Image (cartoon, rainbow, N blue to C red; front, side, top):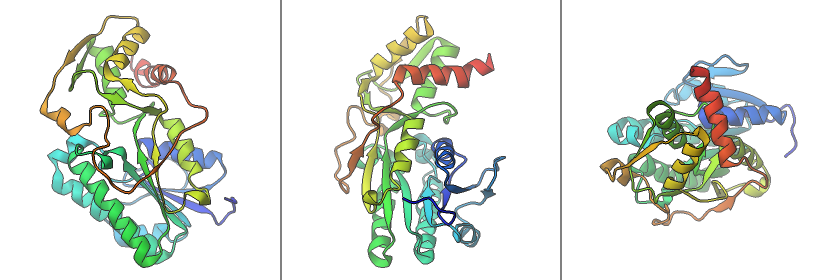
Length: 292
């Protein structure tokens, strides 16, 4: 994709964990970026706007040709505790974005979805993402809105949300010498560092990914119990592991999310990537050592 002055990109939810890394990567690649979030951040071309504010959002997007949508509620537990708020924020809010993009005839919208769309787990968070994929496809059919759906796996890295899996485990191990796992340790994830996820996301600006569903996750699978052993070895101390098959765990897939069949996606992976162990060290250094 040719980078010109008119190729301005709006990143909605650009103050969040993944969104902020994508903003950095876009800026590094010399794209013109407009950050839109309901949280005020001290960065150039940053604007405060709630995605429920249709008219203001439309004004902010009006000079952008591409839109990345990372807004909404992503914590599964929070979504299950607040279903109506989740439905409003995720479905109504994102549909506002789709509608605005269709009316403004943006070149393409990039929608952050999740691997949970393949799963019977994931609660209201999963359900809203499944619904939005269908809504987006209908907008595409009815209004020729070009899109790319990005189904992210287990993203980790510095400055993540407190409920992020890796952050949560490290926080427990460092501060309590104990990790409580809402499972049996056999749960499998393909962790991907947020920097690698951001680079792959930017790659999706290429024309070949137009109107495609893409899976963005790690290269190697790891069981939870092996991850806990790695954390213990990195911290060089004994960490007690407590396994609980709690109700909370029923909303998280165990070995694979693939027990539901949505629109088929392509999986893209980085040729070079940040090793999980190195990534854990980076999170410890940046998110925990600064507090000691």
